[in-house]
Image (cartoon, rainbow, N blue to C red; front, side, top):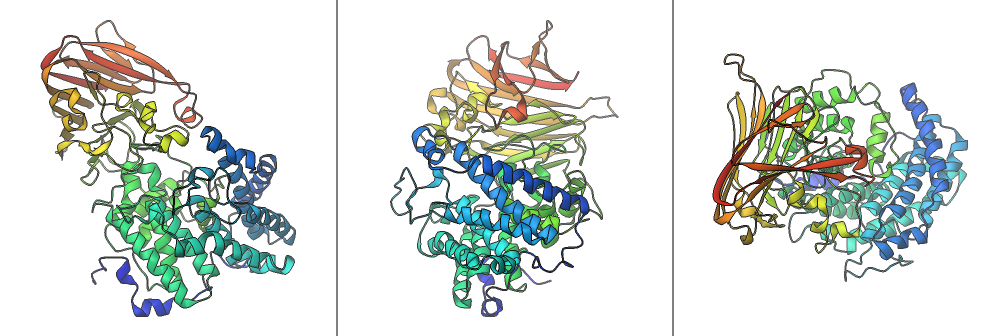
Length: 629
């Protein structure tokens, strides 16, 4: 067996450069090749046509306008323009799929009109991202001759280039000049900035986040379709490999994503898409799937999955599996990296999630197209891949469950780490607990993004970002602070079969005014022991020492309203919570949820259970045990 190269950059050898052929890559066969499109699943084809009609009506009802764009500058509102733009993108993407499904020339007109409207937009960039890279200046309205290569600009260019690769010939016959216009816009908005401007997501100061592979994957599609010169295409590839190496450098060998499971689908998944394009445009000469830690990254989503529709959601993640998940992509990623368990898990999930066309189609266009053209992909060996336990030293995240591959019984996730991860929340020591797939202790997640979400001066004023609304200690009412220095110390994980345990000292995660010398946290999932009669459950133990008498509080966030029982126990849905150690008083706060991103996950409210030490003291210990009611 040959040893894989150590870096992506080392893949671009002279033979690999020679293998690059401009304008030969296609996202799919030409739409005129009806035989190549004849094998689609009838139900998937029908769904495409239905979605195309719905998304066309949605776009007509909500066009992207200047007034919607300006609402970000005026009030910090992101959603109004972003939803309007996504509606237009949904119309374009679904119209292209409908044309491919039917081969009907009449559908070419609807696609051409939508593509033309997209080319006429003053900016493909989103208002929140419209900052000139050379100065940071933020014009309130887009300049007529200046776009910004952000995520949106990248995936719009990538979608249009992919459509041009399989539908461009047909469109050009009906609408001569449309192809030239589309390619000119891709050059002006995507390829020219890519080659001449420097953005934060290049990662020259520190390893970049999901923006890097996400944008690079789309730039590569644009270059593969539009670029005529083999030398320029090779230079684009060289630049892409350099940025992807910086992104890869931000990952530990365990492949854990500090942006969490939700953002993995824009981080690890788009790295796969970038590597897949590189592999295809070089006839296999550029094969980066064996470079570390790429195979480990492919395993991350199944390790973070709790149940069929739920996942571990630290940072800006959501507790339910997000709409951008593609189990087909995960299966392909597993095949490319030789990870059989990943393939089997992807197929297992794919059998439970039928093909769909989402309104947010542009960022997922290639994923949708590949799955549409691969009916029956989920057949073959399939099995859930969620492990009995797993620990990632790179992010100090641990997961454990009673039985591998099952959502039944107890599940525990706990983390150490630090408060300077991408999409950070102040949550060092945070825990998530579920029972039979139902939430017991939760991480609320993040609401709709606004201007304040990404302003360091205001981000940690948002309640969902604060440690006092995560399942962590609150010493003397003092919260954790953001920054890499605010971190767990001495984190250790063990699993002896009977119990899986994460231990850490949380004291360094708090500022000096907390007066903490130590705050030892133990989070343990205890499996049932038929030999001893011991029942399964979860134990959370905190032992602390202050420099002066203080009161310790423990915050526990729940989806269901806790019920304070007369015997001192607390009911949380199917679970019963009991305390041992210092005397505490329990207080329950209902938090109404009106945010349109959080409400579909949690319903009308979440709850904050606070257990506060009755008497100040220099030290203490509190054990919280969760058992089945």
